Length: 327
Length: 273
Image 1: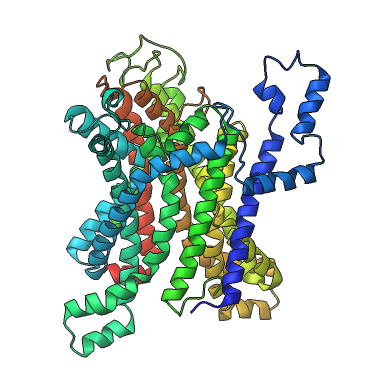
Image 2 (image 1 turned 90 degrees about the vertical axis):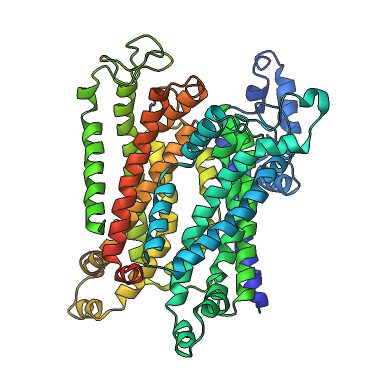
C-alpha cells in the first residue's frame, strides 16, 4: 500500500511542475512586445487619451509591480481565467474546454482500441521473442514508427477518402446538417478514419512497451520455475507472464491518455476535426500566443495529473515499486 | 538480413543524403525560392520534379530542404546528447547534494509536455533554424540525463575507476578518460535515436507551420503541397518527393540505431537471438 509521506511528496512535485509551467507562460506573456492596448486596439492606440490608457492599465493591474502581477496571474489561472485569445477575442479557457469535447470523441475510442491491440500484439510478440513471426512484426513496427504520423494521415486520406471514396475528406459532419441537424451516424462516418489512424499510432507505441515488458518477464526466475514444475505453456503465459508483464502498461496507459491530447495534432489538422489539435495549428498560424499558452497549460495539467495517477496506481498494484526513490 | 548489412545500408543512405545536402548549390544553382517556371508544371527535363504553385522548382526545394532538415535534426540531437552526457557524468560521478537537487529538478521538469512547450516557445521567439535546434536540443536532453546518470553510476563503482583514483588521477581525467569511453556506446545509440526523433519532431513542427515562408524544409514542402490541394489535383510529384525524403532518412537512422543497439547491448542480442 502507498505511504502517506510518499503520496504527499508526489503531490508536491506535481504542484511544482505546474507552477513551473505557469511561470513560463507568465514570463512569456510579459516579455511579449506590446501590451493589451497596442495589441487589441491597434487602430485606436494613437488616438486614445493618455488618461484612458492609464485607466486601462490600472484596471487590468498592469501598473502593479511584477511580483504582484505574478501572484494575480497565478490566482487567475487557478480560477480558470486564462486570458483572451488574440484572434478570436474569446476567453481561452472556455474555447479549449469546448474543443476538448470534440477531441475526446476521437481519443476515447482510439485509446481504448489502440491499447488493447498494441498490448495483445506486443504480448504475443514478446512471448515468441526471437521467432520468425516476432522479428517480422518487430521490423514492420520499426518501419511504421519511422514514418511521420502526418504522412500516414495524408496517405490514408488519399487512398480511402480521395481514391476509394469510402470516407469523407475531412470535417466532422456533412453539409446536410444545416437542414437535418447533427446526427450520430453522420458524425461516426466522419470519425471512423481519424479514429482508425489514431488507434494505429497508439497501438504501435504500445506494442514496444508490451513486447519489452514481456521479454523482461520471461527472463525471470519464476517463469523458469513454472516451466520446471511442468506447467502448460499456455498456463504460464496467462497466469504468470501476462499478469506481470501488464504492470508497466498501467503507467504507460495513464500517461498516454494525457499525452495523446497533443499527439493528435496531425490527425485533427489533416482531417479538419475541430478539436484541440486543430485549435493548436490554428493558433500557431495566427501566432495567437495566449491561446497557445492556454493549450499548453491544459496539456501540462493533464500530463502532470496523469503521471501522478500512474505513480499512485502502479505503487498500489505492485508493492515492490516505490517510484521517486531513485536507484 | 543480418544487422551488419542493415547498419551499412543505413550509413550508405545517410551519406547520400548528406552528400546531396552539401551539393545543393551544384544541383540547383537557382536556390529554393527562385521562381524558375510556370506554376504547377509536371516533371520535364528542366524541372525533374515539376514546379509548385508559384513556379518554384521542387527539386531545388528538395535539395535545399535537405540542408535545413538534416541540420536541425543532427544539431539538436548533438546538443541533446552533449548536454545529457556531460550533466549525467557529473551527477553520476560526484553524487551527493548536487545530484539530489538535480534529480528533484528533473522530477519536476519531466511531466511538462515538451511538444506543446516547443510550439509555444518557437512562436514566441521568432523561429529560425538556430532557435528551433537549440530548443529541441535542450528539451531532448532532459530525458537523456537520467539514463546517462544511471549508466555512469554503475561505471563509477567499478574497480578501474577506483584504481585510477588511487594512483592520483584527477576527477576531470577520470571522467573524460575512464568514464566517458565506457558510456560512449550508449551515447552513440542515444545520438542516433535522438536524431531520428528530433528530425521527425522538427518536420512535424514545420508541417503545422512554425516557420516563415522563406525557410523551406521538407515539412513545409509537404504542408504547402497538402494545403494548396496538391493531393486533390492528383499532383503526386509535388507531395511525394519531400514525404519520401523524410521517410528515407528516418528509416536509415532507424536501421543504424537498431543495429547499434544490438551491437552495444549484448542482453538484447540474447533476447532476440
